[in-house]
Amino acid sequence: MDGWISETFEAADGAILAYHARGTGRIALLIHGFLASSELNWIRPGIAERLVKAGFRVIAMDLRGHGESEAPTEPARWPKDVLVDDALALITHVGLTDYDLVGYSLGARTAARMLVRGATPRLAVLGGMGASGIMEAGARAAMFEDSIRHGDQAKDPVAGRRVRAMMESAGLAPDAMLGVLSSFAATTQADLRTIEVPTLVVSGQDDADNGSPEDLAALLPHGTALRIPGNHLSAVGAPLGRAIVDYLSA
Image 1: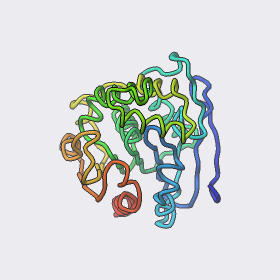
Image 2: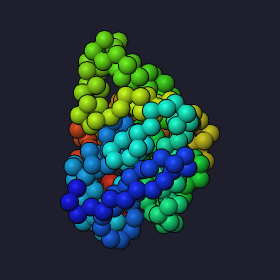
Image 3: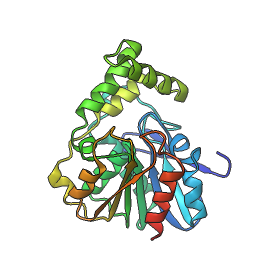
């Protein structure tokens, strides 16, 4: 991560969490997906660098349990909405008052919850996310939990092997990842309709992992849906980077 400034801050429960910053200009706060990190979702695919070159200062946080952040394994350290609490604490720590908010997959779910709870970025981008992924995460969370616990003995052995391999590659603690899943808080249609921030909902053309981005955009008072090439994983690259920069720069 050459050229990046990496810092830490303390969450409300004392967890030490990491974030990474680069560039000058308007701040874009980036939140990565499940089983990933700032490096995997934003830096390696070139999305963060595209934002920096477009005149943004990128602040990318490593969610609790991921990347360089602390990964608690005790269930008590994973209350409902703790990832949202952490992200809001980072906003306070850095002193952000005028910024844009971007999340992908779990990061988009976290960003949407931040908006529901009163975060006020100028613009928001929710990537790799649809209505059911925010409001009804149960089935997908259950698949991840089964995969984490049982690997190739899971109900879907292919998913189990893939999830286990991703965790091993990233050095993720199984109990921490189960904690992430247990921290999900419900979001209703009524909640989503309270979000006044203009929001781009962008997903790969072949991405159905978290439901329909069109349905999610329709629930947002100022939502716009966009499809880009790729699936949930392959869209994380140039197509997503272009969509984010175009929306935030308009």
